[in-house]
Image (cartoon, rainbow, N blue to C red; front, side, top):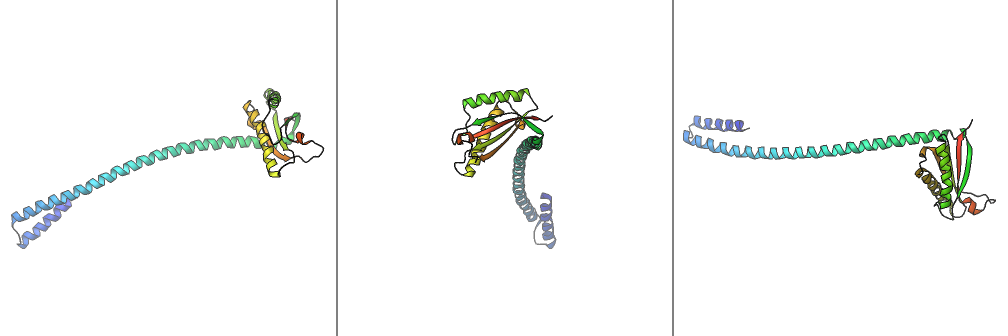
Length: 211
C-alpha cells in the first residue's frame, strides 16, 4: 500500500517537473512531506486492521468455547434420550405381554382419607413382596390405585395415581427394577358393597409367565 501511494506522489512530481512549474528541491520537499503523510495514514489503517484482527480472533475463540460446551451438552442429552428409549421399549414389551401372565400373589395397600403416604405397617408388608421379586427374576408386579367416590373425579384420579406412585417408589428404593413394575391410577371405586375405607387402596399383584 505504501508503494502505491509513493508511486502516485512520484508521478505527480514528474508531471509538475515536466510542466516547468516547480524546482527539483521543491519537488523533493513535497515528495518527502507526502510520503510522511501517506505513511502515517497507512500506519493508522494497519493499526485498525490489526485491532480488528485481534477482536475477530477473540470472538472466534469465544465461539469455539461455546461450540465445545454445546457439543458436550448435546452428547449428554443424546445419552439420556437413548436411556429413556431403552426403558420405554422394555416397558412396552412388558405391557404387551401382560395377558400372557397369571397372578401368583396379591395384596391390598390401604390409605387414610385423602392420603397417599405409606404407613410403617404397609412398608413392612411390601418388604415381603420385594423378597419374592428378588428371588424370582421372571416375576413382575402390577399396581392399580383407587379412591373412594368423595370429591371430584379429576382429583380422585390424581390421588389414585399418587398412591400408586408411593408404592412404586418404595419398591424401586428397595432395588426392584422399574421395568418390572406396571402401575396405573384408576380413580374412584363406585361399588356400594365395598366400604369407603377399603376403596382407598392400591392393589398389588405379583405376576408370572403362564405355563
